[in-house]
Length: 344
Image 1 (cartoon, rainbow, N blue to C red):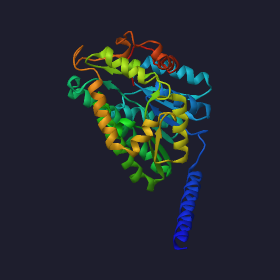
Image 2 (tube, rainbow, N blue to C red; image 1 turned 90 degrees about the vertical axis):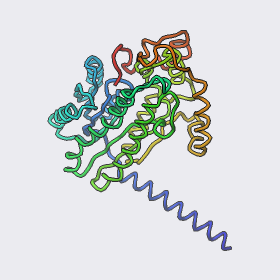
Image 3 (cartoon, one colour; image 1 turned 60 degrees about the vertical axis):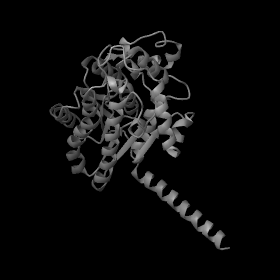
Image 4 (tube, one colour; image 1 turned 30 degrees about the horizontal axis):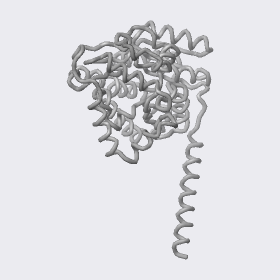
């Protein structure tokens, strides 16, 4: 009897907890219609897909990126969709540029309701090929870029007592991915920053959501940077970006991100439902790290162009582009990744 009573009480407690969480999410929900949203890295890839979906929900959207031609193309597309859009050239690693851009958005929209930090840089190659500058560049974009934009939008959000911030990190910010050490280290820093911001800003009515994507098919390998044996590095990276059952479509990822933002979720993991390996990592972290160590032994060694960098579009081989990368190549065409220019 005592055991049954305990189980019954536990069940009631669990039910009450789930019910309270559901009510809390509902109380936080809002409509994007009429809201002013600022997206960094919004000219291509996941940032552009987010901008499309937000425009379709009648949000007012500002996109920031470094490459003027990409911004112009993205802005034309968003305007054709009927969006109220502003596109601004800005390097998020430079505080003065971020300040100027945010001021322009505030003047145009009268406020910023939602900030989406999506801008990123990807460097692929063995540790021997990486330089201090590679680590500095990754930290400048992922950590300092996120902090720069956040600090600029906070006064307006605090004044109104409401705001949402979405920081797109990576599964690489929780598990060290071989041959992507600058990216991984900077994403670890971003995860810590994002979680800390959540704790600090909740009292001000500002909810921060940390997004942890696994593999999202955006077409980004074309504009990632590859070092060492760059053609082989590009081949494995771009094939992984296209594998069915491994990669998640950018459209599904963006929709899930917007739902998490709308519900004020603390953290959301993005993965293809068929990619069971990602889910297992949460339960077997030690085994996962061991397997990643074994994977590193199978990846290309030092050589090739050494410490120099080549973009993905400069690193073609018989393996990539090929039928193995067809899905990723199609995503690159859809998401404005085809220009031979530096990635955001």
